[in-house]
Amino acid sequence: MFDTVSHVSFITGLTLGASLIVAIGAQNAFVLRQGLRREHVAAVVSVCALLDIVLMAAGVSGLGAAVQAQPRLLEAATIGGALVLAWYALAAFRRALGPHALRADPAGASQPAGQVVLQALGISLLNPHVYLDTVVLVGAIGARQPAGTQGAFLVGASLASALWFAALGFGARVMSPLFARPGAWRLLDAAVGVTMGWIAFKLVTGQLGA
Image (cartoon, rainbow, N blue to C red; front, top):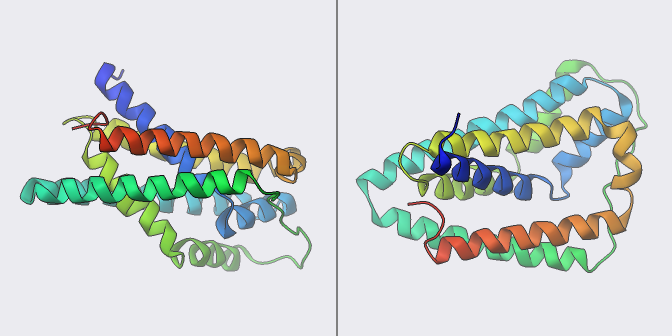
């Protein structure tokens, strides 16, 4: 069981991870497409989720170790993280004002599992935003968590990623009508914007960790 402080870090990781992962992008569209096709869904979901978890763990542990050697790095990472979150929040609010939807064409010939996995790896690892979100942003906020709670923070962020990809892949057939509705994404983007703005504010005011 988590203590109170660890519980707060867990919730922080969960909300941050959820806010970052639900943004419309090529990776989400690819997972949705495979879900609609019911083709190698488990492999795709596993690859995307595990990559997120590995990169977030590298960010939290790497920045945490660097901060111990260079304390000023934490201040720089905090300011940078708050600015990125604020930018993401503004982008989410902008998306909430315009019509858009997540669509994935389920048509096409069947592909072998190895080829699909390579596509998932390419879409994930060749996107620079993946590293900014997981290694830099999640790492910076994770490094600010009180001593002994970084693990709880990472569990929360990892759970958000795993649950989202699983819901997107395995629930694609049921959830695709919702994903195709611009109104649903407006509400989701508005919620994402509020969450990111709140986390950025807490970072700047020193109320988030450390």
